[in-house]
Length: 542
Figure 1: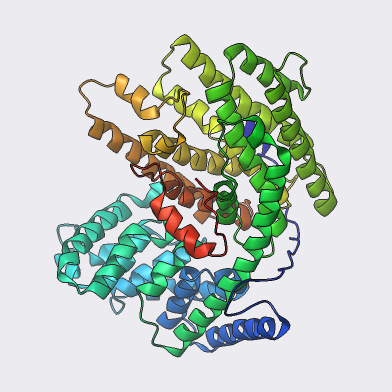
Figure 2 (figure 1 turned 90 degrees about the vertical axis):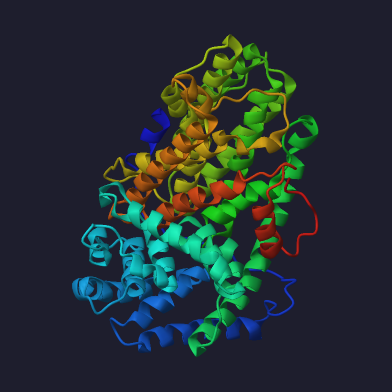
């Protein structure tokens, strides 16, 4: 994975440009001056409210947790960090004292670990009995079990199975209690099991949180009001961004040239929305959608269109960064789009941050196409690679390293002292995508091309394994990659927080992007899209 080494010494913070929202079609809070003032006033009210809460209290962490679940935490990042720093100073008392129940201990653990504070998993040992198992008496504490379940998703390899046990314990008892709960509380529990905060996207799932929680306190109503205002602000921003993405895609003409290739600009843009959540980073969302789109198109070229000889020529052209006369016209067209888009992104980075990443981006594209070609040669020759050989190549062919390389530079990070952390975090995200894709859920593509599967190759190496055994092995590997990803993202490193968050968000979106039903649709994701993009009337995603 030579590409991953491209990012091993390029960390440098930079200021973010601001995208100015334009005209909104939102009915409640259009972006006129009075409502923008009201919007800003609500943010100040929320900030002042948090300041007034008693330092070290449980209420502090409850409010911060709600801010995160409503997707409002980015407006209060500095204040949240200061508050949790004070909570951490008192963590020995707050987390280990028998005066604090399972809910309080789990919630504090979750928030502190999410924000990079070192909190060992053994804080949960006091909730175990003499048999070193979680006490059955906890099964009556629904709120505590829900909080424990949330905390269990922050597991890293160093946790000595404590959080794995917490996950199984909380899942089993919450599932068992579901039939005995009223509809409202059952919905809360089901939402926790289906959409744990750490592995979900707040902008996609906040509607579920609103539906399953009674907002009775004044601060909850204030936060909900701010969330509704923010929703309409973001609708306006998304509308303008989608317009620009669709305009760019239509003007390229690739969908006309490649009739069998995917034509899903809204779906591609969703990756950008998930990765880059800061409202001010419109330019970044628009620009990163372009290489994302091209990954899908190049994948279709390798999988559907090209002969092996043509694919070799195309890959050589990408490596030389120079078009070859022998390429068929559709490949020449695609090569030119890749080249133009890459130079455009490099120019954006240069204009905004003062240096040009073109060499890194060219290497990223070369690595991706080399990986695609390796797979094409395997399939053409009938060769079945070893499962781990396939996965190593598949991490690059997932497109994640190439896309995240582009994003890293678009966020303004560059040369610095050096770290291998970037390589690890990208590799884990890519492995999660490749493994879940390979579970056979991505059946929407309805194409004639051939795709390998990690599970298929792994099961060939085993004796007497069932399909269920193979699926469980893949899920176990995904769990392991999540632990590695958590370690990179939740531990102090030189990786910028905005990039770590983007990587986590990619991993969070993957299950929704590959949860196809029998009709080759994505019902869970479609429901979120209808909520987030209510102004978009066309079914351009699938």
